[in-house]
Amino acid sequence: MIASKNILVTGGAGFIGSHLVKHLVAKYPEYTVFNLDALRYSGNLENLKEVKDQKNYRFLHIDITDLDRLKEVFARHSFDFIIHLAAESHVDRSIKEPFIFSHVNILGTQNLLHLAKDQWGTNADKRFYHISTDEVFGSLEETGKFNEKTPYDPRSPYSASKASSDHLVRAYFHTYGLPIVISNCSNNYGPNQFPEKLIPLFINNILNNKPLPVYGTGENIRDWLFVQDHVQAIDCILHQGKIGETYCIGGNNEWTNIALIKELCAQMDKKLQRNNGASEKLIQFVSDRAGHDFRYAIDSSKIQNDLGWTPTHTFEQGLSKTIDWYLANSAWLQNVTTGKYQQYYAEMYNSK
Ligand code: NAD
Ligand code: TYD
Image 1 (tube, helix red, strand yellow):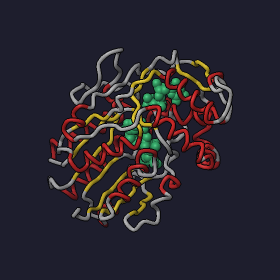
Image 2 (cartoon, helix red, strand yellow):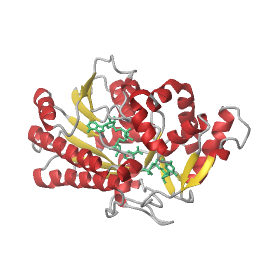
Image 3 (spheres, helix red, strand yellow):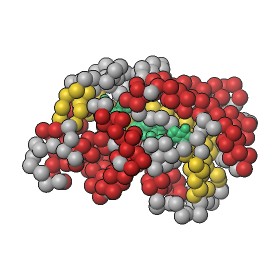
Image 4 (cartoon, protein in one colour):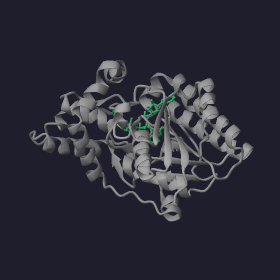
């Protein structure tokens, strides 16, 4: 029998967090899942409608930079696991507004670490699990892959803030014995992703016959991971990962941006019953992103060998599921690009 536990998920209203919360609530009825989220532009309670009335789900509308409110939460509840996802998460925004990234991603993480330390001490039954990114490792050339031993070399304000938060997490482990674990994963895609990241932005633009702005030559490479595969990896690491360890998670699925965009365009043409090539006509090569990392790729052998996790979706399958979700949820897409989200969406879109 699985023991009852209180799990705090931060950022549970966002893209990855909402998939994780839904997974935990459904799979572990004996756990109580507390979703702590400030509902910034990418946080959306619509992502959680399936669990909002479940007995083992609670929502806490709190900002992780607000230490006083966090103290109240930790005074009221004892947590067994903290899975920390709340963050500013988009590189392009970090280029425009770097300060908020340091504030939320570094200070917010330290607030949580400190309260976890005060509540737990060195209790090895607890876990502070930080969800981080492969972008902390910098940029690869044509060959090689990131692994757990790759030195940090962050190059955007976003990745620098995530690298700083990783360092703080390890500092709390070494200095105070806080039971921590970290994973660094590659680019996620799937349903419910705010349409500022490449795949959902381009799906939305194709639906609206808007240009598809490809940065630079389109030859940059990313290793794409379907969000449900990531959630399975998080579950493995939460329950079986070793205290103090890092795990790299990738999709083993490298695509140049331009090849990915062409695959997306072809699938969209088919699904929308448009002429073959109609979506590709929307491609526009635009100025490159400042400091654009050339290539990310992950060697996931540690999590595969030690914990038995492996990604199960091919990119074509995952992309097809993703597009189908956006087509079936046009109201969601409409809501997050208009109304209270309009300012955020327009900021990104108008800058292209
Ligand atoms: P997202 O932007 O969709 O979600 C972030 C969530 O954090 C939102 O619900 C937002 O409201 C919340 N949040 C932001 N600031 C907050 C604050 N001050 N206090 C409380 N909540 C706040 O991001 P995502 O893509 O789901 O990413 C989740 C985590 O995974 C992030 O830590 C990100 O760095 C990491 N990550 C993401 C990817 C990816 O490809 N999306 C890859 C690697 C790592
Ligand atoms: P993105 O989804 O922003 O993720 P990240 O920067 O964290 O990898 O971008 C993925 C790739 O797509 C990246 O190489 C930048 C590129 N890109 C474009 O070419 N055009 C766009 O409008 C966006 C958002 C991204």
